[in-house]
Image (cartoon, rainbow, N blue to C red):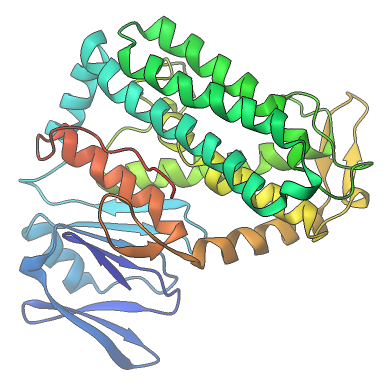
Length: 343
């Protein structure tokens, strides 16, 4: 379990939630592991199999405490929300801001600042850990370009220009990404980002990880009452979860890219686990997919000090923390949205 501000995250799959007077209790194997007053809570987010008692659901609805159920893997299942403090006003604010270019720009800049900052951190961390085997000058040049672009992003006041800066930063970052692949170069190399379909093993791995991160972003946004399909950086498109794509941008380098590089460099997967289809696209086989999912889940259990909340939380909860902070900003509880800066 983890409590962030007024949100309780129940991360043990075997947990069962129940009501005891004015308290929520959490049981595991019939033993009470946590007792907490309901009046301290604004939201409860559950990553469990067993669920919650009807009495607790009713109490949460009466007290306007959001109760959200996700699968242990983070996929959204259902949300119970009270009458008075529903998500209508929050979503109306989200829709109004999405139609207001200057207001959207403020949030879009924050997403992009987080992404570029974290891309640069991935490069700098690689230099620190593997300077002997890397083209350090080439990577440092890319890192400097990313650092310079942060100043330009802060001063940018046009969304089209901001999207151009995002594309330029991505080209700079992915232009040296192949340098970070230290082993299995015959099977895992990176020439350029390709998708729909991915055209090589590394792109197939990245696309799979990005898809999982997108699903978790959708779940996190649903959990706090936001519409995952109405974004501020990515444009609205039928069927595209634009806000989820916005939110995941700042976590892609830290979470997905580093997981991909780690799995390849530690030889946790190999080229035999990838299949090229007649269309030219590359897919992972079932065994490799299971290996990736296992590492993904293990990574989510690692802890990190959240740079804004100043609390140690699981990696898997970072995107939920960011969704919560975004909702708080839209409600007017924060002066600005604080992006996730990896340290």
